[in-house]
Length: 391
Image (cartoon, rainbow, N blue to C red):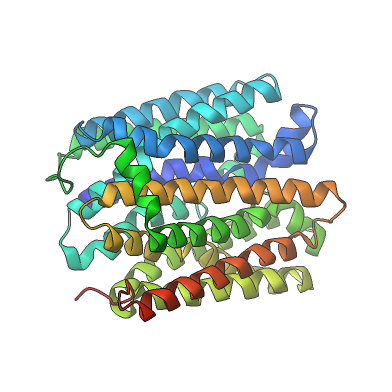
């Protein structure tokens, strides 16, 4: 598992980049003389590029050694974040976010596929969870650290931190990670990858990912403003709340992997999505910092805990093409990012305040729950379910 944790470290760098805008968005928008809704579309650009590029990159790099793909991806990612840190205008920033998305699109599915190849079948749920905990654990450490740098110096310092982590991850993986045995029977073409979308259950699982992530990102993109509007916090208190949120995310991601291996993917997904819905509904009703602190822990866990079992379900649906399935889920995940950032921007544009923005997110969570329940019902009635844990 040591090598799997190295992959988690690379995911940690990418996760910091993914989530850090939620803490530095106000400063970034002010520095570039634009609105927060416009600056928030940097999340949309990253997400759309990632979603479109993931299956294409996965198809064109499938014949290459995994280590080479992972190191090259982190190198592009690092260079792009240096560009973001030096962006003089919003247009340049959006362009560099797109390039950073290309690096992330190459890294994440390759990391998950490599992790599953490094462990036995009964531990795949945990291996996926370790990589995803790196991605989500960034909320606990990387994002608060970046937010503190932004408050102490400038938002650009936060992006320099992301670039430094990407460089360290590239060096560590390049030095220590060997090439695991191939899990797929050859490089899958783009047609084969997209062809998996013709399977109704796979398409339904991807839809759950899109709506669930959309729910989480609708609120998280503007989390600093939501918390400020709800309980009037900023500065150090905001950083502490982000740390609590991140701790919840890290614990939730690891716990969901264990639950997936023991009680099954379907039950784990159902529970975490219901928890996400409940949390989003109560955020606007919080009346004190203490209550928000508790909510932050649960909110962080609920936002990410469905991801490992979703990956697990897709690998079970396409056991001969795990990287293909993971790459499609990564695309769905970032389509959810685009959906969430776009929905948040539209909601703010039509007059929905920051206090009530979590309720917009809750509507997307409800759609995710309904889609998941319909998917599991169809699987059970057809006699083919991915719910059973592997022993």
